[in-house]
Image (tube, rainbow, N blue to C red; front, side, top):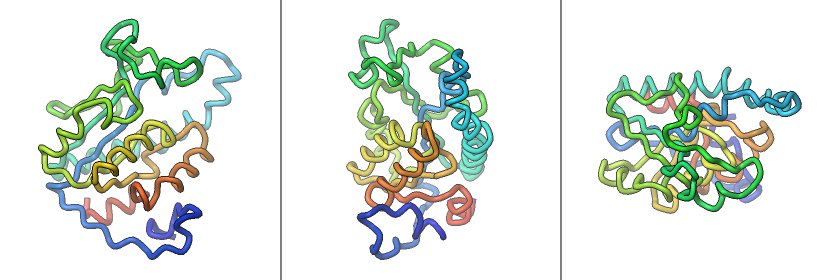
Length: 223
């Protein structure tokens, strides 16, 4: 099964196959969302460390290597690689959106200069690459990214990052609402569990984006 048949939700079971993708290099960028140090740190609590072990393993063995490879291929072809991260401008986080102030797991206090808020070294931005800093789930809502993409003449955004069912999904939906063509690379994304990851891909596929593997994208774009 290829990307044209995979990850179909209830709404799209009988829908026609999507057309072949046309992704000119000068109209296509790669955007990586929130792969930051905070999310790769093992939890101090043994129970939580065990609970998050599958996510940590997927990140180390699948997502980071596949994302790094895809970023390198984009750069080799002179294509833009963009980055987004969660970080607040104020030390006390008063500038954060409500979703990042609510108590619980999603409570995020990541001042922009802290080590936890930095992008992981394996995927660190290269000189001159655009990095947007957001205090919202969507990288479009909380930054000037929309204006940047429009000024650059971008039509297609290739998405990677975490978490599939949160900031990735929010950014995908925002981009789609602004009429960008969005491609989500399945093996370059992760959620807290594999079930959440796959379910969210089914929800957003074919209406807000097209979901495909890095192997399929590399073949389609001749990267």
